[in-house]
Length: 312
Ligand code: NAP
Image (cartoon, helix red, strand yellow):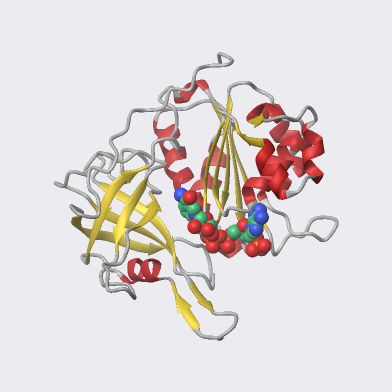
């Protein structure tokens, strides 16, 4: 493979439909995406975009807008929410008509009042059944994409929870294109039962020597010092596998999921001397940033061109 190859991102059409001209489409399928008896409810939900302006327009890594019905406390229509698509660019059907997302029902207790709260849009979407109709818009997102010249790169994907969604689609895109390079997928979940698309990823790892799947179970597999293993710990715990991939100049890093993982991964990259993925500002010694305040840390570096981030 060539080194220092230019990253050419595809030209994408954005916001073909927005909140004002959203299209109403049927749900094709809604299935539980976790394995085993998880107490969390996470669904793989597929929309049928056939015959709408959105047909064939989504790329893996982009998001679809969902318009939940009803109004907010000010009487305004509920705001549109964005969900990463988890289908490949050609859709689940190979023709860009059927696109999916991965939704976790948000259910919690308000810490002060002890009242139950439920996420408005995640619960609306999770309750829809095949045949029900939903207003959608998009596509949204123009950087968190695979390069057009995808075969020229290796990929290290870091996901936590439903942050796996775009990587299912991207990995399917790579496999459908006959990709032969190296992929490491590091997927963080609290429990084994919360791992998503587990059978697909395990199957790929078994069949494809270039695909490495590293599930990272924070609440079941403590590290030697008793701490929770997070995705960034794999940079150290599996340096035998990841260092050689990360040292190649044509490796790209993609990160999706919880906001907190960003700092952890950047610190892991500094510890392992992979600072060429970062843009350092006004600091000669990146390792000094490991003990810096979070303000100083944020001021002094940002992701470089080979790092793609989508964290909430
Ligand atoms: P989850 O199932 O709770 O899993 C999150 C995992 O990350 C747990 O193992 C958790 O460990 C671990 N974790 C906690 N703090 C961490 C940190 N600082 N660094 C690394 N790992 C950490 O996740 P979820 O409820 O599905 O949430 C996924 C998040 O991804 C949501 O915030 C969602 O909005 C976001 N998301 C973003 C996009 C996008 O940007 N396009 C797409 C999909 C999802 P413990 O809990 O055991 O400590």
